[in-house]
Image 1 (cartoon, rainbow, N blue to C red):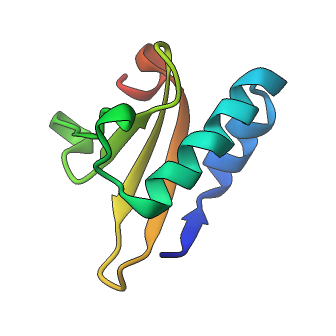
Image 2: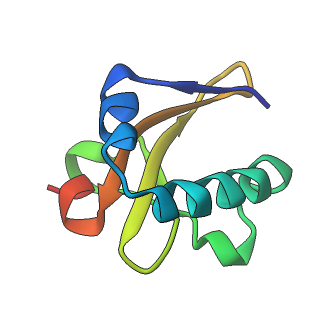
Image 3: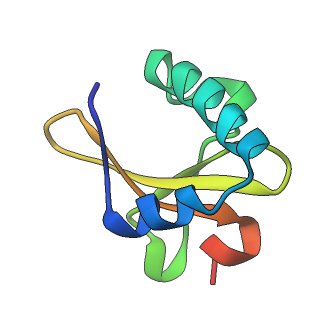
Amino acid sequence: MLIHRLPRFDRRYKKLPAEIKDRAEEREAVFKLNPFDPMLETHKLHGKQGDEWAYSIDYYHRISFLFLKSGDVLYTDVGTHDEIYT
């Protein structure tokens, strides 16, 4: 699975603290093996983001993404629960 990133994701990721980036990299390795691993708490979003999914980096931070028809994934956003779901 290839992971593509929107420019918005990249901009917001750069602003994360180093410890969150480290955790995100660890979680991404798990995600690549199994996007629905229970430790990720992967879930479908609702409302205007109804086509997207998200998984947890830690208690506060999430990565939102889309499954692409090619089997790849597109990261759309990263941030706290409130930042992503508003």
